[in-house]
Image 1 (cartoon, one colour):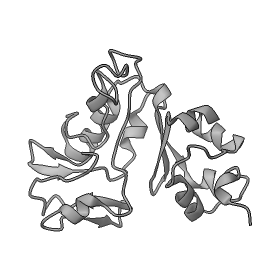
Image 2: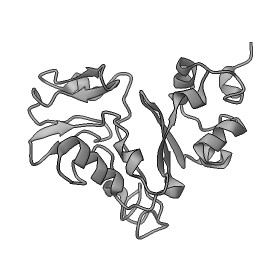
Image 3: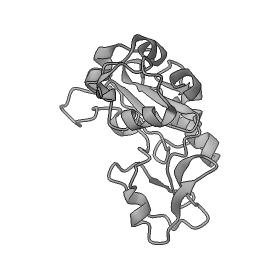
Length: 205
C-alpha cells in the first residue's frame, strides 16, 4: 500500500482526521496538490522552506503566510480586543512583536524590520501532550469543548505560565495567563491575508 504522506493532498479524498494526521507531522517535503496550493495561496517552494505554517482549528486550518505579513500588529490588536477587552501586544495570544525587529534568530540574523522585513506570526501549537497543562499547579488548563482547544480557565488561574515556546503569557492588568483559543479574530483582522482560515469543507471530503 503506498504511503499516503507522499501522495498529493486533495487527490486522496482526505477525511478531516487524515488531514490532521498529515499536517501534524509538518508539510515540508510533502507534495501538495495544485488545488490545495491554490487554496493556501502559495507555492510548493514556500511549503518546503517553512514560509507557510498550518494550525488546525475547529473552523478549519489557520494558514500563516510569512511572505504576506507586513508586521502591522493588527492580529495582536484584534486578539486582545476580542479576548481581553483591551489592547496589548505583550499579552496577545498571537505574537508578532517578539521577532519584529531582528527576526527569529535575534540580532544579526538578518530578519525582521532591520533585516529582510520577514515577520513571523506565532501562536499556541495546541500540543498533543501539552507541557503547560502538565505544569499547571492547580489544573486551570484543560481542553475546552466549546472552542475545541486547550484553554486557560481564568477563574482558577493564579498567573503563572509554562510553555516551551512561551506562547502562554500573563496579562499584567488581570494577572491571569492567557493562550490561544482558536477564535479566528486574528485572521479576520489581517489586511493582507497573511493569516487566513480555510474551512474544512474546502479541504477534505
